[in-house]
Image 1 (cartoon, rainbow, N blue to C red):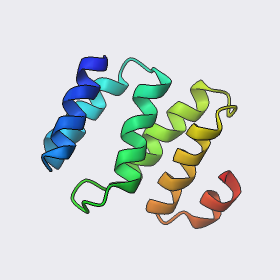
Image 2 (image 1 turned 30 degrees about the vertical axis):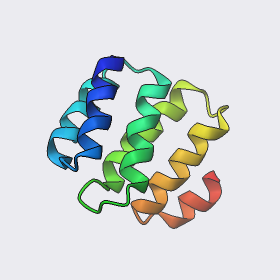
Image 3 (image 1 turned 90 degrees about the vertical axis):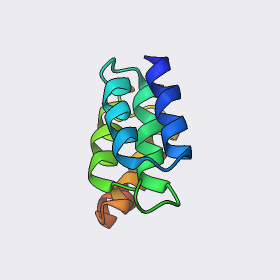
Image 4 (image 1 turned 135 degrees about the horizontal axis):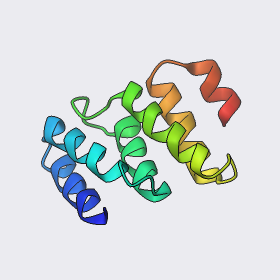
Length: 96
């Protein structure tokens, strides 16, 4: 699934949001933590508003957090950023 993640990163760079989200979903299907965390971070923090999507960032980040049993601080930071982008500020604060 790393090929899908590479494709997704290229699409984000080229600002093709709709196609990037399609590839995010393909990449995440394998359930690997890094592959879940990367799109979550991008969707939560992209400087391009067409790419940012708090709701989908939360979905990816929650799956990544579950896969690490809430033990990976990098993944927890991603979840906090996703919650903030989704305007779930209380959850963002308690997650961080």
